[in-house]
Length: 230
Ligand SMILES: [Zn+2]
View 1 (tube, rainbow, N blue to C red):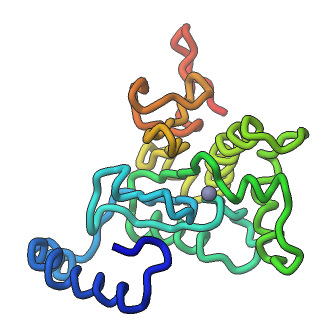
View 2 (view 1 turned 90 degrees about the vertical axis):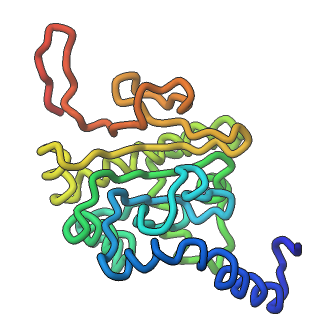
């Protein structure tokens, strides 16, 4: 099978294969989703990178993930200062209309967006240049290196979680316990998601983590039992 630069005919073959092989085996599922509508419990905000495959990583299928993807898995400011944006609209729709129960922000290793934030973009890419400012606070004041970029990929995920909390409908539902925020860093070469652990303040491989990440905004319980709000 041709990978990558598939010819138009190859694409057509794949479309036919979906219709003739996959669809008949899952037809009832699709029928139910049409008749009952979609009720995904998860909003997945992921980087557009082709190596990040949300359905594979989470073992999900049709109807389970409401997905918005962009370069870097960034969340624009709620206040509209970043212009018209589909990601902002998708967050509002997922939270206010679909009533999702969790929001995942998923960055990844070897992210081109973070690399570009360190090393620059072609002069003509004016929109990309502006977009990458959403990661500015995650960029370290050092030369670009694999270690610095890895660190920044993780910092960028936490930064987007913080920005999500500036969305009034997100903050309201997180604080009332109806919504949880999850920060993930997919390490491609390990085949593993590292989840942000609010208590440790660090990313933990899923194989060692006690939960799939709750975001940094659950009330933090001190050792004496007192709950500290942020
Ligand atoms: Zn990326």
